[in-house]
Image (cartoon, rainbow, N blue to C red; front, side, top):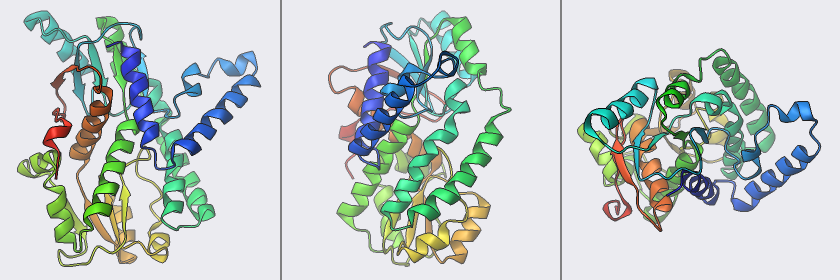
Length: 323
């Protein structure tokens, strides 16, 4: 499979599972096209043609020829220079045949622009009944914090390593997160867990979460009791990184009782507790792994790839994931 085919199929799956809906994402792409047509030559120096079909700034081919064929990919949640060197060593010493490195968390330019993908969170909050003006204003502040935190970072270390070692590198972030967000939202809508203990039991039937529980990193309740009723559930699995830490009163006012997410900061958790919300952490690496597996299920619909799992990733296919 060509590397560009993997990339474009991942983007298409991300759009199909976007909480905003494909039509809304299509409008964003049309706006980007109109904006590009008015750009000066200088402005286009910092612009990428990928933006015309890929609305996710944190998902890119970072090194290598997009037209090259890939048969075996080494995949991990975090793929730094050490994992790139591992792939090179496996090829050199064991003839592993790895011809593509796939990271979940963004690197290079995709990491530098991570804050841009956070805008989806305002739409997700609006869908749960939070006023869009409240959501957008709180989110803008948080996006600024994330952008400033990332600004001085050395984003290109793994990209440089991959380029020098001749290994293609891509990162697939928001498309995978969109997939797990949709999967869990549909699961909870279908099975309607009554209490938090039922929600945890439902998660543990999924192979990725069951495996994490065996490593003492499984789903857990961090606010609320096992016997607490779930009420209205909000799934927070996409949007780049943690959103506004002061949004929880607005969640409660909108009628949300339980939030299911990958992780939560201490400040945000304290605010959620003050708002009397139930918080369930499904798990970070396990949720990222589930998202990647769902994404690869879509990519592999016509032809299969071989996978070498590292850095927290284990390939599980759709047939093994039927809770």
